[in-house]
Length: 495
Image (tube, rainbow, N blue to C red; front, side, top):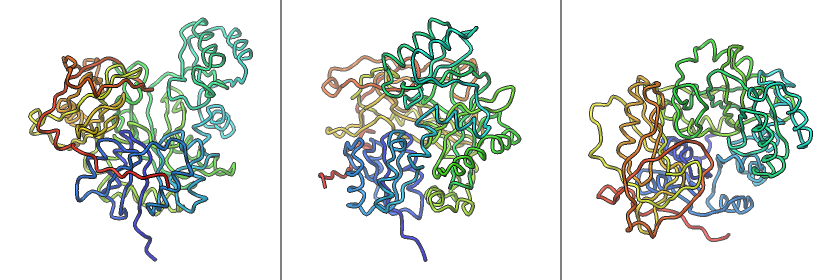
Protein backbone atom coordinates (compact mmCIF):
# COMPACT_ATOMS: atom_id res chain seq x y z
CA UNK A 1 0.00 0.00 0.00
CA UNK A 2 1.39 3.40 -0.97
CA UNK A 3 2.26 5.83 1.81
CA UNK A 4 0.65 9.30 2.00
CA UNK A 5 2.59 12.31 0.80
CA UNK A 6 4.68 13.97 3.47
CA UNK A 7 3.51 17.13 5.17
CA UNK A 8 6.71 18.25 6.88
CA UNK A 9 7.30 20.54 9.85
CA UNK A 10 10.93 21.72 9.64
CA UNK A 11 12.11 23.48 12.80
CA UNK A 12 14.78 26.17 12.56
CA UNK A 13 15.75 29.42 10.88
CA UNK A 14 19.33 29.09 9.63
CA UNK A 15 21.23 28.25 6.47
CA UNK A 16 20.99 24.55 7.28
CA UNK A 17 17.19 24.75 7.29
CA UNK A 18 17.23 26.71 4.02
CA UNK A 19 19.24 23.92 2.39
CA UNK A 20 17.01 21.20 3.83
CA UNK A 21 13.86 22.95 2.62
CA UNK A 22 15.42 23.48 -0.83
CA UNK A 23 16.29 19.80 -1.25
CA UNK A 24 13.04 18.46 0.24
CA UNK A 25 11.10 20.74 -2.13
CA UNK A 26 12.45 18.61 -5.01
CA UNK A 27 10.93 15.39 -3.65
CA UNK A 28 7.88 13.86 -5.30
CA UNK A 29 7.05 12.33 -1.90
CA UNK A 30 6.51 15.75 -0.30
CA UNK A 31 3.24 17.66 -0.38
CA UNK A 32 4.10 20.62 1.88
CA UNK A 33 7.04 21.94 3.94
CA UNK A 34 6.28 24.29 6.83
CA UNK A 35 9.40 25.97 8.21
CA UNK A 36 9.11 27.28 11.77
CA UNK A 37 10.09 30.07 12.12
CA UNK A 38 12.04 30.09 8.84
CA UNK A 39 13.92 33.05 7.40
CA UNK A 40 13.82 35.49 4.51
CA UNK A 41 14.88 32.83 2.05
CA UNK A 42 12.18 30.34 2.94
CA UNK A 43 9.65 33.22 3.02
CA UNK A 44 10.68 34.19 -0.51
CA UNK A 45 10.40 30.58 -1.70
CA UNK A 46 6.79 30.56 -0.58
CA UNK A 47 6.01 33.24 -3.18
CA UNK A 48 6.89 30.78 -5.96
CA UNK A 49 3.64 29.09 -7.06
CA UNK A 50 5.57 25.87 -7.74
CA UNK A 51 7.21 25.81 -4.31
CA UNK A 52 5.91 23.62 -1.48
CA UNK A 53 7.59 25.80 1.18
CA UNK A 54 5.82 28.13 3.63
CA UNK A 55 6.97 29.88 6.79
CA UNK A 56 5.27 29.75 10.18
CA UNK A 57 6.36 33.02 11.76
CA UNK A 58 6.10 32.10 15.42
CA UNK A 59 8.53 32.07 18.31
CA UNK A 60 7.76 28.82 20.08
CA UNK A 61 11.11 28.19 21.83
CA UNK A 62 10.79 25.01 23.93
CA UNK A 63 7.00 24.79 24.23
CA UNK A 64 6.88 21.24 22.90
CA UNK A 65 3.16 20.55 23.59
CA UNK A 66 2.37 23.68 21.57
CA UNK A 67 4.56 22.42 18.72
CA UNK A 68 2.61 19.17 18.75
CA UNK A 69 -0.68 21.09 18.61
CA UNK A 70 0.60 23.09 15.61
CA UNK A 71 1.60 19.86 13.87
CA UNK A 72 -1.85 18.35 14.44
CA UNK A 73 -3.57 21.53 13.22
CA UNK A 74 -1.58 21.38 9.97
CA UNK A 75 -1.94 17.59 9.52
CA UNK A 76 1.83 17.17 9.77
CA UNK A 77 3.05 13.58 9.35
CA UNK A 78 6.83 14.12 9.49
CA UNK A 79 8.84 16.44 11.75
CA UNK A 80 12.48 17.48 11.28
CA UNK A 81 14.10 19.17 14.30
CA UNK A 82 17.55 20.54 13.50
CA UNK A 83 18.73 22.49 16.55
CA UNK A 84 20.77 20.86 19.29
CA UNK A 85 18.44 21.92 22.12
CA UNK A 86 15.36 20.38 20.48
CA UNK A 87 17.13 17.08 19.87
CA UNK A 88 19.07 16.83 23.14
CA UNK A 89 16.06 17.88 25.25
CA UNK A 90 13.90 15.10 23.79
CA UNK A 91 11.53 16.79 21.37
CA UNK A 92 11.35 13.48 19.50
CA UNK A 93 9.44 11.79 22.32
CA UNK A 94 6.66 14.41 22.31
CA UNK A 95 5.92 13.75 18.64
CA UNK A 96 6.36 9.98 18.99
CA UNK A 97 3.76 9.93 21.78
CA UNK A 98 1.45 11.93 19.48
CA UNK A 99 1.93 9.35 16.71
CA UNK A 100 3.88 11.74 14.44
CA UNK A 101 7.23 10.45 13.08
CA UNK A 102 10.18 12.68 13.99
CA UNK A 103 13.51 12.49 12.17
CA UNK A 104 16.09 12.29 14.89
CA UNK A 105 17.35 10.17 17.77
CA UNK A 106 15.71 9.61 21.12
CA UNK A 107 16.75 11.77 24.07
CA UNK A 108 18.89 8.91 25.40
CA UNK A 109 20.70 8.40 22.09
CA UNK A 110 21.17 12.17 21.73
CA UNK A 111 23.35 12.13 24.84
CA UNK A 112 26.16 11.45 22.41
CA UNK A 113 25.99 15.17 21.63
CA UNK A 114 24.44 16.52 24.81
CA UNK A 115 27.14 15.22 27.17
CA UNK A 116 30.80 15.07 26.20
CA UNK A 117 31.44 12.95 29.29
CA UNK A 118 28.84 10.43 28.08
CA UNK A 119 30.33 10.47 24.58
CA UNK A 120 33.92 9.97 25.77
CA UNK A 121 32.96 7.20 28.20
CA UNK A 122 30.92 5.57 25.41
CA UNK A 123 33.92 5.67 23.05
CA UNK A 124 36.13 4.15 25.70
CA UNK A 125 33.65 1.32 26.32
CA UNK A 126 33.49 0.51 22.61
CA UNK A 127 37.16 1.07 21.76
CA UNK A 128 36.47 3.95 19.38
CA UNK A 129 39.65 5.99 18.79
CA UNK A 130 39.60 9.41 20.45
CA UNK A 131 41.94 11.56 22.52
CA UNK A 132 42.94 10.34 25.99
CA UNK A 133 40.92 12.20 28.62
CA UNK A 134 39.84 12.66 32.22
CA UNK A 135 36.39 13.83 33.32
CA UNK A 136 35.77 16.02 36.37
CA UNK A 137 32.57 17.02 38.15
CA UNK A 138 34.21 19.28 40.78
CA UNK A 139 36.39 22.33 40.31
CA UNK A 140 38.81 21.21 43.03
CA UNK A 141 39.53 17.84 41.39
CA UNK A 142 40.05 19.48 38.00
CA UNK A 143 42.51 21.98 39.50
CA UNK A 144 44.44 19.21 41.27
CA UNK A 145 44.75 17.34 37.98
CA UNK A 146 45.94 20.51 36.27
CA UNK A 147 48.71 20.98 38.85
CA UNK A 148 49.84 17.40 38.26
CA UNK A 149 50.47 17.93 34.54
CA UNK A 150 54.02 18.57 33.39
CA UNK A 151 52.96 20.45 30.23
CA UNK A 152 50.04 22.84 29.97
CA UNK A 153 49.89 23.58 26.24
CA UNK A 154 49.19 20.12 24.85
CA UNK A 155 45.66 19.49 26.08
CA UNK A 156 42.10 20.78 25.60
CA UNK A 157 39.48 21.76 28.17
CA UNK A 158 35.85 21.14 27.19
CA UNK A 159 32.61 21.96 28.95
CA UNK A 160 30.64 18.72 28.88
CA UNK A 161 27.20 20.08 28.01
CA UNK A 162 25.82 22.00 25.06
CA UNK A 163 27.80 25.16 24.49
CA UNK A 164 28.69 25.20 20.81
CA UNK A 165 32.45 25.46 20.28
CA UNK A 166 32.68 28.29 22.76
CA UNK A 167 33.04 25.64 25.45
CA UNK A 168 36.25 24.26 23.94
CA UNK A 169 39.42 25.98 25.18
CA UNK A 170 43.03 25.38 24.11
CA UNK A 171 45.16 26.89 26.89
CA UNK A 172 48.73 27.93 26.18
CA UNK A 173 49.86 27.98 29.84
CA UNK A 174 48.97 26.72 33.30
CA UNK A 175 47.51 30.13 34.11
CA UNK A 176 45.25 29.99 31.05
CA UNK A 177 44.08 26.51 32.06
CA UNK A 178 43.25 27.49 35.62
CA UNK A 179 41.45 30.60 34.41
CA UNK A 180 39.42 28.46 32.00
CA UNK A 181 38.40 26.05 34.76
CA UNK A 182 37.39 28.97 36.99
CA UNK A 183 35.27 30.46 34.19
CA UNK A 184 33.59 27.18 33.26
CA UNK A 185 33.04 25.46 36.61
CA UNK A 186 32.81 28.34 39.10
CA UNK A 187 31.68 31.42 37.18
CA UNK A 188 29.41 29.25 34.99
CA UNK A 189 30.00 31.26 31.81
CA UNK A 190 28.41 28.37 29.89
CA UNK A 191 25.72 27.72 32.49
CA UNK A 192 24.96 24.11 33.36
CA UNK A 193 27.03 22.98 30.37
CA UNK A 194 30.03 23.51 32.65
CA UNK A 195 28.85 21.29 35.51
CA UNK A 196 31.35 18.74 34.23
CA UNK A 197 34.51 19.22 32.18
CA UNK A 198 36.72 17.05 30.02
CA UNK A 199 40.49 17.56 30.01
CA UNK A 200 41.92 15.67 27.06
CA UNK A 201 45.08 15.41 25.01
CA UNK A 202 45.31 17.84 22.12
CA UNK A 203 45.21 16.11 18.75
CA UNK A 204 47.20 17.29 15.75
CA UNK A 205 46.45 16.67 12.09
CA UNK A 206 43.67 17.85 9.80
CA UNK A 207 39.97 17.90 10.57
CA UNK A 208 37.05 16.56 8.55
CA UNK A 209 33.32 16.12 9.16
CA UNK A 210 31.09 13.25 8.06
CA UNK A 211 27.29 13.35 7.80
CA UNK A 212 25.99 9.81 8.20
CA UNK A 213 22.41 8.59 7.82
CA UNK A 214 21.46 5.66 10.05
CA UNK A 215 18.36 3.61 10.79
CA UNK A 216 19.95 2.14 13.89
CA UNK A 217 21.60 -0.74 12.02
CA UNK A 218 22.56 0.28 8.48
CA UNK A 219 24.38 3.55 7.83
CA UNK A 220 25.40 5.60 4.80
CA UNK A 221 27.73 8.62 4.78
CA UNK A 222 27.86 11.59 2.44
CA UNK A 223 31.15 12.96 1.11
CA UNK A 224 33.63 14.12 3.77
CA UNK A 225 33.58 17.89 4.30
CA UNK A 226 36.26 20.18 5.61
CA UNK A 227 36.08 23.51 7.42
CA UNK A 228 38.38 26.49 7.16
CA UNK A 229 41.94 26.73 8.35
CA UNK A 230 44.07 29.85 8.51
CA UNK A 231 46.78 29.08 5.91
CA UNK A 232 45.39 25.52 6.05
CA UNK A 233 46.99 25.18 9.48
CA UNK A 234 45.22 26.92 12.36
CA UNK A 235 42.05 26.21 14.30
CA UNK A 236 38.86 25.30 12.48
CA UNK A 237 36.61 28.32 11.95
CA UNK A 238 33.30 26.53 12.40
CA UNK A 239 30.24 27.87 10.63
CA UNK A 240 31.95 30.37 8.33
CA UNK A 241 32.57 28.08 5.38
CA UNK A 242 33.03 24.52 4.17
CA UNK A 243 34.02 22.50 1.13
CA UNK A 244 33.69 18.94 -0.09
CA UNK A 245 35.04 16.50 -0.89
CA UNK A 246 38.28 16.64 1.07
CA UNK A 247 41.16 15.99 -1.28
CA UNK A 248 43.15 14.34 1.50
CA UNK A 249 40.61 11.61 2.31
CA UNK A 250 41.24 8.60 0.03
CA UNK A 251 38.81 5.69 -0.14
CA UNK A 252 41.03 3.57 2.11
CA UNK A 253 40.80 6.18 4.87
CA UNK A 254 37.01 6.38 4.60
CA UNK A 255 36.80 2.59 4.82
CA UNK A 256 38.97 2.74 7.94
CA UNK A 257 36.61 5.32 9.46
CA UNK A 258 33.61 3.08 8.69
CA UNK A 259 35.26 0.07 10.35
CA UNK A 260 36.92 1.66 13.37
CA UNK A 261 34.54 4.55 14.17
CA UNK A 262 31.11 4.59 12.53
CA UNK A 263 30.21 0.88 12.78
CA UNK A 264 31.27 0.67 16.46
CA UNK A 265 29.34 3.87 17.17
CA UNK A 266 26.01 2.68 15.78
CA UNK A 267 26.52 -0.92 16.97
CA UNK A 268 27.49 0.32 20.45
CA UNK A 269 24.43 2.53 20.82
CA UNK A 270 22.18 -0.31 19.69
CA UNK A 271 23.83 -2.77 22.08
CA UNK A 272 23.27 -0.34 24.95
CA UNK A 273 19.57 -0.23 24.13
CA UNK A 274 19.54 3.26 22.60
CA UNK A 275 19.73 2.74 18.81
CA UNK A 276 20.48 5.90 16.83
CA UNK A 277 18.07 6.68 13.97
CA UNK A 278 18.60 9.95 12.14
CA UNK A 279 21.74 11.69 10.98
CA UNK A 280 25.02 11.85 12.86
CA UNK A 281 27.64 14.53 12.21
CA UNK A 282 31.04 13.21 13.32
CA UNK A 283 34.00 15.57 13.59
CA UNK A 284 37.29 13.76 13.16
CA UNK A 285 40.96 14.62 13.43
CA UNK A 286 43.10 12.69 10.97
CA UNK A 287 46.30 12.16 12.95
CA UNK A 288 49.54 10.32 12.20
CA UNK A 289 48.04 7.44 14.20
CA UNK A 290 44.85 7.41 12.15
CA UNK A 291 41.39 9.02 12.46
CA UNK A 292 40.14 9.95 15.94
CA UNK A 293 36.78 11.36 17.03
CA UNK A 294 36.67 14.97 18.22
CA UNK A 295 32.94 15.02 18.89
CA UNK A 296 29.51 14.00 17.66
CA UNK A 297 26.44 16.03 16.70
CA UNK A 298 23.11 14.22 16.69
CA UNK A 299 21.81 16.32 13.78
CA UNK A 300 22.69 17.92 10.44
CA UNK A 301 25.88 19.98 10.67
CA UNK A 302 26.05 23.63 9.64
CA UNK A 303 27.50 24.56 7.11
CA UNK A 304 28.15 20.92 6.10
CA UNK A 305 24.48 20.57 5.13
CA UNK A 306 24.60 23.58 2.78
CA UNK A 307 27.72 22.10 1.18
CA UNK A 308 26.76 18.42 0.88
CA UNK A 309 23.07 18.47 -0.10
CA UNK A 310 23.82 20.22 -3.44
CA UNK A 311 26.10 17.27 -4.31
CA UNK A 312 23.24 14.76 -4.13
CA UNK A 313 21.97 13.56 -7.49
CA UNK A 314 18.47 14.41 -8.67
CA UNK A 315 17.66 10.71 -8.34
CA UNK A 316 18.50 10.83 -4.64
CA UNK A 317 15.35 11.69 -2.72
CA UNK A 318 16.25 13.26 0.63
CA UNK A 319 12.74 12.77 1.98
CA UNK A 320 12.87 9.07 1.12
CA UNK A 321 16.27 8.67 2.79
CA UNK A 322 15.02 10.38 5.95
CA UNK A 323 11.83 8.34 6.07
CA UNK A 324 13.82 5.14 5.49
CA UNK A 325 15.95 5.97 8.55
CA UNK A 326 12.83 6.06 10.70
CA UNK A 327 11.35 2.91 9.07
CA UNK A 328 14.52 0.77 9.54
CA UNK A 329 15.03 0.28 5.79
CA UNK A 330 17.94 2.53 4.91
CA UNK A 331 19.61 -0.36 3.09
CA UNK A 332 16.83 -0.15 0.48
CA UNK A 333 17.59 3.48 -0.43
CA UNK A 334 20.21 4.71 -2.88
CA UNK A 335 22.16 7.88 -2.01
CA UNK A 336 24.19 9.05 -5.01
CA UNK A 337 26.42 12.02 -5.92
CA UNK A 338 25.58 14.18 -8.95
CA UNK A 339 27.83 14.98 -11.90
CA UNK A 340 28.90 18.13 -10.01
CA UNK A 341 31.36 16.45 -7.66
CA UNK A 342 32.76 19.47 -5.79
CA UNK A 343 31.02 21.98 -3.55
CA UNK A 344 32.15 25.14 -1.74
CA UNK A 345 30.10 27.23 0.70
CA UNK A 346 31.14 30.71 1.80
CA UNK A 347 29.23 32.24 4.71
CA UNK A 348 28.76 36.00 4.76
CA UNK A 349 28.49 37.32 8.32
CA UNK A 350 27.51 40.53 10.08
CA UNK A 351 30.09 42.88 11.52
CA UNK A 352 30.97 41.85 15.06
CA UNK A 353 30.35 38.13 14.54
CA UNK A 354 30.83 35.88 16.52
CA UNK A 355 30.14 38.49 19.21
CA UNK A 356 27.31 41.06 19.37
CA UNK A 357 26.21 42.20 15.91
CA UNK A 358 24.33 45.19 14.57
CA UNK A 359 21.48 43.86 12.43
CA UNK A 360 18.49 45.16 10.49
CA UNK A 361 20.42 46.26 7.39
CA UNK A 362 18.83 45.85 3.93
CA UNK A 363 20.19 43.02 1.76
CA UNK A 364 20.32 43.37 -2.01
CA UNK A 365 21.51 41.20 -4.89
CA UNK A 366 23.45 43.04 -7.62
CA UNK A 367 22.84 40.94 -10.72
CA UNK A 368 25.19 43.23 -12.69
CA UNK A 369 28.06 41.45 -10.93
CA UNK A 370 27.11 38.03 -12.26
CA UNK A 371 30.13 36.40 -13.88
CA UNK A 372 29.27 34.65 -17.15
CA UNK A 373 30.97 31.49 -18.36
CA UNK A 374 31.19 29.64 -15.04
CA UNK A 375 30.65 25.91 -15.49
CA UNK A 376 28.49 24.97 -12.51
CA UNK A 377 25.64 26.07 -10.27
CA UNK A 378 25.31 28.72 -7.55
CA UNK A 379 22.81 28.86 -4.67
CA UNK A 380 22.05 31.37 -1.93
CA UNK A 381 21.02 29.68 1.32
CA UNK A 382 19.66 32.34 3.67
CA UNK A 383 20.57 32.21 7.37
CA UNK A 384 20.13 35.38 9.47
CA UNK A 385 17.63 37.10 7.16
CA UNK A 386 14.02 38.19 7.39
CA UNK A 387 11.55 40.00 5.17
CA UNK A 388 10.64 42.89 7.44
CA UNK A 389 7.33 44.73 7.77
CA UNK A 390 8.52 47.20 5.13
CA UNK A 391 8.83 44.30 2.64
CA UNK A 392 12.61 44.66 2.51
CA UNK A 393 14.94 41.73 3.11
CA UNK A 394 17.08 42.56 6.16
CA UNK A 395 19.81 41.01 8.29
CA UNK A 396 18.74 39.45 11.59
CA UNK A 397 21.78 37.55 12.85
CA UNK A 398 25.50 36.92 12.85
CA UNK A 399 25.67 34.50 9.94
CA UNK A 400 23.57 36.03 7.18
CA UNK A 401 24.02 34.30 3.81
CA UNK A 402 25.59 31.00 2.76
CA UNK A 403 26.72 31.19 -0.87
CA UNK A 404 27.23 27.76 -2.40
CA UNK A 405 28.93 26.83 -5.65
CA UNK A 406 29.08 23.37 -7.21
CA UNK A 407 31.05 22.22 -10.22
CA UNK A 408 33.13 19.35 -11.54
CA UNK A 409 36.30 20.67 -9.93
CA UNK A 410 36.94 22.21 -6.52
CA UNK A 411 38.69 25.21 -8.06
CA UNK A 412 35.70 26.00 -10.29
CA UNK A 413 33.21 25.49 -7.44
CA UNK A 414 35.28 27.93 -5.39
CA UNK A 415 35.22 30.55 -8.17
CA UNK A 416 31.45 30.19 -8.48
CA UNK A 417 30.88 30.62 -4.74
CA UNK A 418 33.10 33.69 -4.43
CA UNK A 419 31.55 35.26 -7.52
CA UNK A 420 28.22 34.86 -5.72
CA UNK A 421 29.58 36.60 -2.66
CA UNK A 422 30.21 39.62 -4.87
CA UNK A 423 26.52 39.77 -5.73
CA UNK A 424 25.20 39.99 -2.15
CA UNK A 425 25.36 43.40 -0.47
CA UNK A 426 24.55 44.45 3.08
CA UNK A 427 26.22 46.79 5.51
CA UNK A 428 28.95 45.33 7.71
CA UNK A 429 29.25 42.13 5.66
CA UNK A 430 32.46 40.11 5.81
CA UNK A 431 33.67 36.65 4.83
CA UNK A 432 36.77 34.49 4.79
CA UNK A 433 38.75 34.48 1.55
CA UNK A 434 40.59 31.19 2.11
CA UNK A 435 37.79 28.63 1.90
CA UNK A 436 39.02 25.71 -0.21
CA UNK A 437 42.00 27.91 -1.04
CA UNK A 438 45.70 28.12 -0.31
CA UNK A 439 47.97 30.21 1.88
CA UNK A 440 47.85 32.99 -0.72
CA UNK A 441 44.07 33.25 -0.21
CA UNK A 442 44.09 33.94 3.54
CA UNK A 443 42.31 36.91 5.03
CA UNK A 444 38.90 38.51 4.97
CA UNK A 445 36.77 40.16 2.34
CA UNK A 446 35.40 43.67 2.90
CA UNK A 447 33.37 46.37 1.22
CA UNK A 448 33.73 50.01 2.12
CA UNK A 449 30.51 51.49 3.41
CA UNK A 450 29.03 54.00 5.77
CA UNK A 451 25.88 53.48 7.78
CA UNK A 452 23.00 55.40 6.29
CA UNK A 453 20.55 57.33 8.43
CA UNK A 454 17.68 56.08 6.33
CA UNK A 455 18.06 52.54 7.64
CA UNK A 456 18.81 53.38 11.24
CA UNK A 457 15.24 52.97 12.42
CA UNK A 458 15.36 49.28 11.53
CA UNK A 459 18.77 48.59 13.06
CA UNK A 460 19.04 46.48 16.19
CA UNK A 461 21.74 44.69 18.15
CA UNK A 462 21.92 40.92 18.38
CA UNK A 463 24.35 38.33 19.67
CA UNK A 464 25.78 35.37 17.83
CA UNK A 465 27.57 32.32 19.12
CA UNK A 466 29.83 30.96 16.43
CA UNK A 467 33.27 31.75 14.97
CA UNK A 468 35.07 33.93 12.42
CA UNK A 469 36.94 37.24 12.12
CA UNK A 470 36.66 40.82 10.62
CA UNK A 471 34.21 42.79 8.45
CA UNK A 472 32.96 44.24 5.15
CA UNK A 473 29.77 45.75 3.79
CA UNK A 474 27.46 48.09 1.92
CA UNK A 475 23.82 47.92 1.04
CA UNK A 476 21.21 49.80 -0.86
CA UNK A 477 17.68 49.28 -1.96
CA UNK A 478 17.35 48.73 -5.71
CA UNK A 479 15.07 47.04 -8.19
CA UNK A 480 16.30 43.57 -7.24
CA UNK A 481 14.73 43.97 -3.79
CA UNK A 482 11.33 43.22 -5.31
CA UNK A 483 12.41 39.60 -5.71
CA UNK A 484 12.44 39.27 -1.94
CA UNK A 485 9.41 41.32 -0.96
CA UNK A 486 6.62 40.42 1.45
CA UNK A 487 6.74 37.09 3.28
CA UNK A 488 4.02 34.57 2.59
CA UNK A 489 4.06 33.43 6.21
CA UNK A 490 1.45 31.52 8.14
CA UNK A 491 0.46 33.06 11.48
CA UNK A 492 -1.18 30.69 13.92
CA UNK A 493 -2.95 31.77 17.07
CA UNK A 494 -2.52 29.71 20.25
CA UNK A 495 -4.48 26.54 19.62
